[in-house]
Structures are given as C-alpha cells and as structure tokens.
Image 1: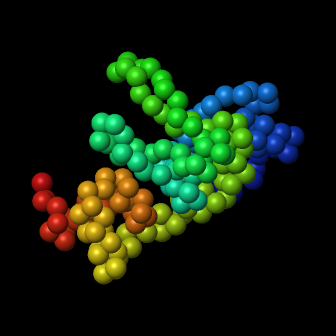
Image 2: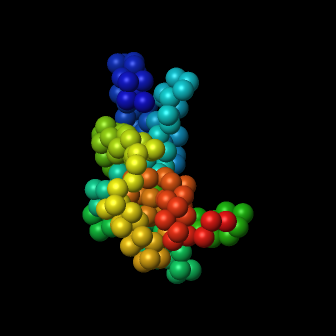
Image 3: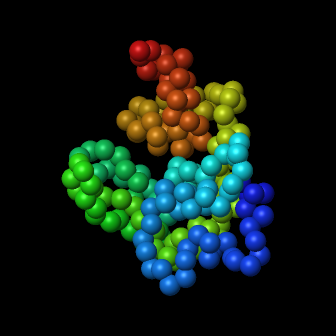
Length: 178
C-alpha cells in the first residue's frame, strides 16, 4: 500500500486527493479507508481497513472500547480523541437510529499524515498471523476472556484475528468447540 501511494502524481497532494479543499465533512474510518484504497490501483495489494485505523487510534489513546447502553462493547473517542476532532454522530438507517464514530477534517488530516504509523500497526498485526502462541499470550488470552471482553477487543489487544483468538480458546479448552 505504501509503495503504491508513492506513485501519486506530484501535481496533487495526497491530502487534496483524499480530502477535497473547503469540504468540511465528518467521515467514518470506513470512508477514509475507502478513499485511501481508491488511490491504490494495484491488484493483490492488501487494503487499508476500518480495523487498521481503529487499532492504531486505540494504540495511541484516541479511541477506546466502552460499554454501550445496550451492554455491547463499542469504540468511542477518548478525551484526547475528542480534542483532536473525533466525535460520535447519531444517524438514522433502515434499522433505526444508531451512533457512529466520525472524524472531522482535522482528524482526517491527522490520520493521513500518520498513514505510515497506521500501516506499521497493520503490518505488526499481520506478522502475528500464524505465529506460535507463547505461554504469556495464552495467559493473557485467558485472563481477557475471563473478564468477558468481546473477541474483537481481545484480538486487538493480542494483535491477532478474531478467528485466531476463538481457535486458541477452543484449543486451550476454555471455549466449547462447536
């Protein structure tokens, strides 16, 4: 992804291509990832995802997991995130009202300026794919699971996929194999 982005014509800045000038709009991380991916026109290139952006924002302390009113765990901006232009917006869809994390223009610029750091976190998570589990990771996995944290949060903390977390819990006999 990074190599492909370096091929962007010098006549336009990367920011201009992603964020049209004088356009004050709140976007989701999915929309930002979609815009970045639209600039990368190579096949077999792994795409930037909402999870990649979220993992990085959690790592730097701008997003965190919290419990919603319905008891589900959800991502929300921290105080630092709010100061940097991350907020919650209420929207209406086919299923009714829902809340979504959005990023103002300043926050979007911050993410684009730090794309290398986002990609580094993505790469670090990818490196863990298929890597053997250590005793310390197993202990941490079990402790997080026993705290009733959602699989997505455990996966993010251990830099593993949700399916890897589930598989390991089953292999350790902590989660019923179904």
